[in-house]
Image (spheres, rainbow, N blue to C red):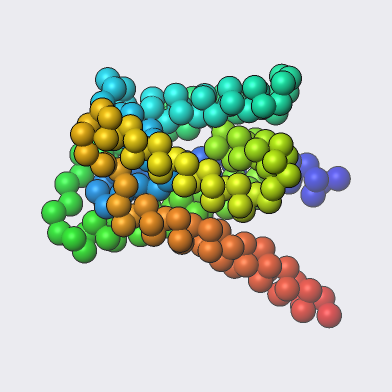
Length: 221
């Protein structure tokens, strides 16, 4: 009973921690100037031609995801509606790190600095995703819409997530060309994020869960 209570108590803490780590990764991508992750690409482009911040653009994008989920489900579910709170909270946290702390104002002139910050962004993004998955609390809107698409198309989450990321990149390129006249937000950092975030999430799973479980099993034996 005590273990269950402690687990339920730690879940929201782990989830909030994951939101903060993921938001920090989001802001670091913009600092690196080498391209942002597929998830951040559309909000990043929106923030460049609309009078809104990156956090507000992220909230707007996430709210659209939730609306798409509700349309696909043809019914209102509290698990889906609760993602709206995540959308607003996550957007606020992004602006907290970017504007209030001032990370978006950091200027990196050297290429090695940009590469280092981009790699840190990828690490933080993967760790934030891992923490939120393990918390098993509320799906963030991007994962929520991918999950609904999986159910509708009877596809695997991995395939749907890859297609979703490609769609986000294509949309951000289209918006860039239409409203900014050149491609922005997409670069080598975007490619690295697509290639590395998934494997890093698996690495955190092995390091913090699988390895620990195996160690405890060997100790008991």
